[in-house]
Amino acid sequence: MNGRAAANIRSGPGFGEFVALIAALMALQALGIDAMLPALPTIGRALAILDPTRQQWIIAAYVAGMGIGQLLWGILADRYGRRPVILLGVALYVAAAALSALAQDLTSLLVWRCVHGAAAASAVVCRSVVRDLYSGRHMARVMSLTFIIFLIVPVLAPSLGQLILLWLPWRWIFAGFAIAAALVLAWAALRLPETLHPEYRLTITPRHVLDSARLVLTDPVSILHTLAMTLMFGWLIAYVSSVQQIFAAVFHRPELMPAMFALCASSMGVTSWLNAQLVERLGMRVIGHTALLIFIAVALLHTVWAGLAPEGMLRFVLFQAVSLACLGLVAGNFGTMAMEPLAAIAGIGAALQGFITSVGAAIIGALIGARFDSTTAPLAAGALGVGITSLLLVLLAERGRLFRSHHAADVADAL
Image 1: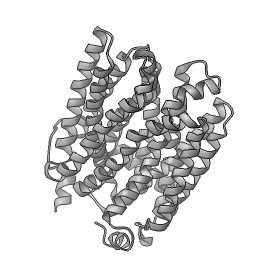
Image 2: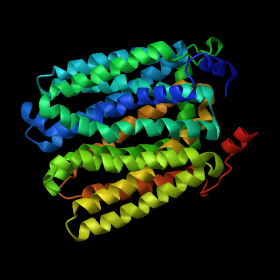
Image 3: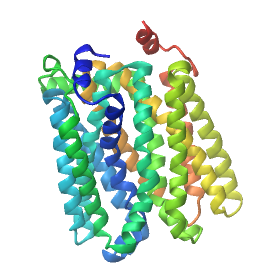
Image 4: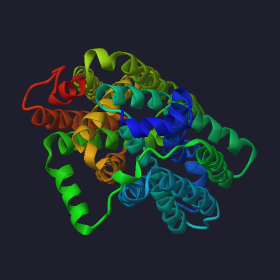
């Protein structure tokens, strides 16, 4: 842990509150997607969206905005510090959510959703806050703990969105985003310390940005793990964007979507908790690589099974729960591995990686989602494709050797 940063955190919240606050800031990203999933058909009818697959653009616009916004926030965080950038981003989140609630057509809604996503992207600075304080397996443990709390949102948010729809118009879901963000903003304003010491703040120049981009894009560990995460999150976006359609068109039980979605998302929370308990003992690579191989095996079985006969709801939920459980192990560990070479440029490094991941995932998710044919087969095949490609990228990053418990980064951290 950085000494001066540690002094700052000791003068602010304790470890438990720090983890909870970071998780709450990061969870605003997921809240902006998951709570509105039950409302997509209602929004489609209200805004005269005739093609149901176009409703997925409301999700894709938000994710694309997250990618674009991360470039700005990361640069500002390295120049002006973490705290003011996070506070500014959350304040913009409040405004964009409110303006999304007032949108009168699909075009204006997509514009404000893109801004909403760009504001939510300020949560990428939270990774830099964690990186300021921790490294190696200790960082992986903290990220896993924040991920557990972060995943409470997708478990509860769809049910919350459906509950709002029972009593209020769909626009109140966006108003709810604004209210929740305002509460987190007040908490962060009161309790979030600055973790970047003034002497480490960088003067941002075009040369610095280019040099940072070159490091992110040319370091094999950084770029290959980032691309692997991009593919995996692309499948996640496809799943999130199409799950409402699947439950309506395939299973004819749209009212069960929030509960089943919560059940699947809970599996990610369980594996993230397990990762936090085991990563310091087993290492990021042993856990992450094993989870990726299981993900591929499950996707292969699901693809074959979905292609042979129409799929039932319970079998689909089981496959998704296992796949998401694997993703919970992959995400935290691959994200940590991708950040390890970037300690000197943690802010802009996280931003560049986040830009690649978010924009790439939005494109991949849209491509998989567009293949929806009233069956679950395209989603299963998409999982298999991204899993195999991710494995090839990881093999390149690891020079053909999986399961190494002592990578150079781990050894350096131990020393």
